[in-house]
Image 1 (cartoon, rainbow, N blue to C red):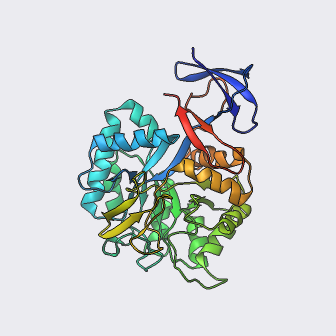
Image 2: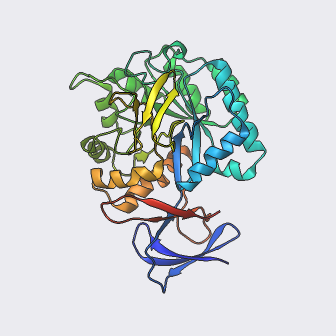
Image 3: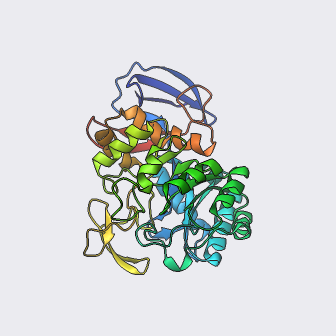
Length: 371
């Protein structure tokens, strides 16, 4: 029965955690003076791929799915939702079918991928709000189309991000919510009333609030304020230090509180790639040494190049929250929103642990995980 000595992520207390049969056996005070920390592994609701692999690719293979999962595991991500974004019907069908078959053939992979996230294609067609999603595939919700993808996914589409102003969106939200799918508002140009109506219909959260939006908005009457103010909505935010200024992160966390804010890295297909110039989405993109991805030769963001571990340090510094609260926003909160069991450092819990180094004011660096 291996025993791990580390500092508890929420209390800083040195603990000795024994593991047997994939579960935590005992948790006791450690006689050692460990410098590393321990926490439940991250759960990220939005991973699009990495290392040049995209879940949207028409050539996606099961081996590539496993590569993404293994890479995420190395960054402390114990579970995540593979995310497919706005594309053609055929590409959606291939992606969901490939993911489902990979999971059916690999019980360990099934534990790591508890569901899928459909981000689009039922989003705004407007520039800015649409983000990098291709205009030609943005469209109104279609229940029969969604059901085909859900069938291809083996019923595993667990979250859908959409724009509530699209024709037929409210009835579509009601059907999704009734079927147990978590509905998120994102890539939207909705009015305040449309957002409120969406929440009444069953929408529960906002996807990467503050990103996927117009560069210029009315100063008072706009969809960011409306989502921020609505107590019925949770919010995910990308806190990698590139997507949102610290003041915006602080305001979102202050408004939603640590109980309704969750972290996503929104890792794209170039996440984890070495610095350099790449071709993706029909454009030249630069991966900078900082991990930021921009349209070549410009300061404009072009997706996310980092993983969930890179989001914790900037969140602590920007929002002024504790290390424990920041990690909970990347572990417990996504699980609560998605209806998954919340993992804790208690006897009997799954031993889905990550170990990391951390100094106050610095970055979290994952050093290992339990299998």
